[in-house]
Amino acid sequence: MKHILYCGANMCQRTQYLVEKYNDKNGLYIHYFEPNINCNDSLVKDYLIKNAVNYSFNYKAVWIYDGKIDFQLQKCRIKNGEVGQGSALTVINNTNFRLKNGKIESVECIDLSKFISELQTDYLILKLDVEGAEFEILSKLIKDNTIKKVKDLYLEIHRRYLKKSITKKQRCDLVEKIKLLNINLIEDVG
Image 1: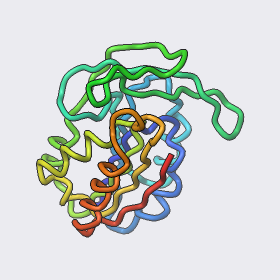
Image 2 (image 1 turned 60 degrees about the vertical axis):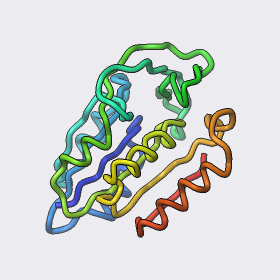
Image 3 (image 1 turned 135 degrees about the vertical axis):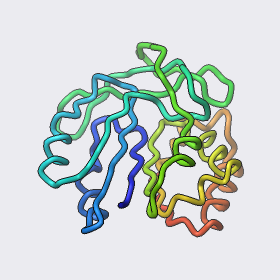
Image 4 (image 1 turned 90 degrees about the horizontal axis):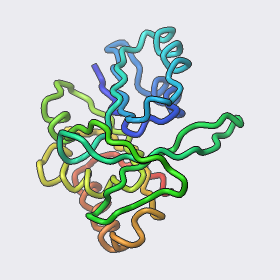
C-alpha cells in the first residue's frame, strides 16, 4: 500500500490529484497533518470515502521534534472565494517569525523524521507545504537518513519566509542533495 504524508494540509486542495495519480489496486493511505483545527476537512473526507481511500487527519504540526510549538493562524482567500486559514510556525531558524494579523496558539507537533522511520510502507509520497519550515524539516530527514524512504517529494519552498534566514545557496544545496538521492522532486516555489 502506498502512503502519502500530506504535511500542511490546510484546505486539502491537492487531494483529488494525488488520489487519481497514486490510488491503485494495492490501495492508498493518506496521513494529513494540519494543526489548524478550523480547516474544512468534511468535503475531502466525503471524497476519500467515495474513492475507497484510507486516511487519517492529524491536527498537529510537522516539525523536527515531538512536543508543542507556537503556531500562527492567518485568514487568507482561496480560489473559490471562501475564506480559509493560512498558518505558519512562529519559530523558523531561531528567529521570531510573524505573519501579519495572525493569532498565535501553542499546538502539538510531531517529529516527521521519527514518524517516517516508524511507518511501514513500500512507497512513500511526501507533500511538504509548511510555510517556511521545510528547510529545517528536510535537513533533519537527510541527517537521520529517513529521506531515503521517500519516492516522490512534492515540495513548496516559501522564499518569502526564507529570505532573512536561509541563503539562496543553502536552499539550492538542499535541493541538490535531495536530487542526488534519486527522489522524484516536484517543486513548487512559492
